[in-house]
Image (cartoon, rainbow, N blue to C red):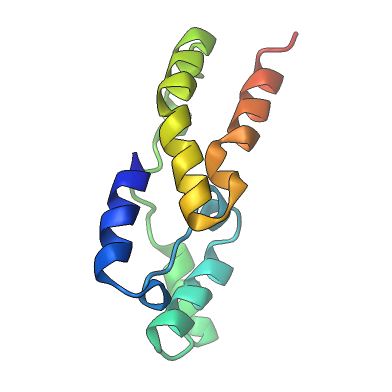
Length: 113
């Protein structure tokens, strides 16, 4: 449903003042994405000791490992519900990765025997 907000934000702010980052991309390479955010905001680069301190910080909102895998029927229902929103978001941002196609492949692989 982010597409609904993206349209509102881009109608009020120039697109060069907005940075979009996918959670999956950030999780895969957090330091690189944080460096990109710092550059985008015009902030200085962190020193190696500062990066080291940051990496040691406790992660918030990372509790998915504590729960069992999502029921495939639930994943299918959610994928179908969000499909039109994700397709619109992908179109607005010019990035098909927002269609969750990679998530669908992961989900299918996780239920194979």
